[in-house]
Image (cartoon, rainbow, N blue to C red; front, side, top):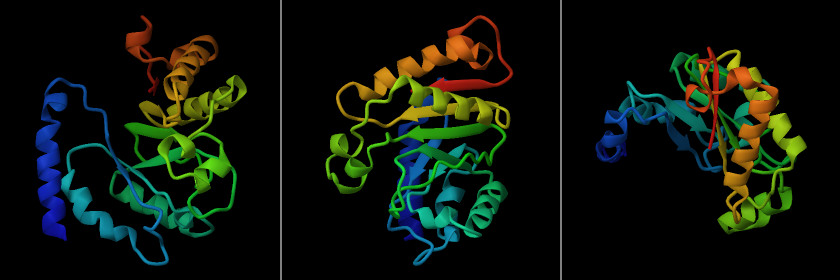
Length: 208
């Protein structure tokens, strides 16, 4: 219910207030279920939650590809732009399964672009039930180079780009993030945030 959503949001905001006070709060991520689909739902159903986080940067990850197929992509983009939401871009396996979003480059908020890298293991992503099984992918350097190029392209439309590695098996995620940062240092040094180099850039790419 709307009342329950507001109560949960209020409690959540209270819990993360130390991060906000310390200047360490980047953006909130709302990751939707694949069951939230245009066949049964409308994006306007999110308006109560969006209102709960008014004043904060809110990134939303859609997990049903129906929201970005054909003419619906333009409608989805308009919804995000009108409400000043960050559309979460993904790096995901190739496939037509409804839970796999295509790798669309879409920046809807001037302050932030957000990319989550889920790996490219299609079999695991669709069929595995454990987190480690679903995101069992060790990114190669050429694949990380591709993600870096997408992030740098997004940096041309947003002040910051957050790249989050969600490959949760073993040490795949932190290793991918480290190698990704090394690629940025070598190939795109002007995009690095201030804490990783002395020169203050006009556009920054962060990786975690």
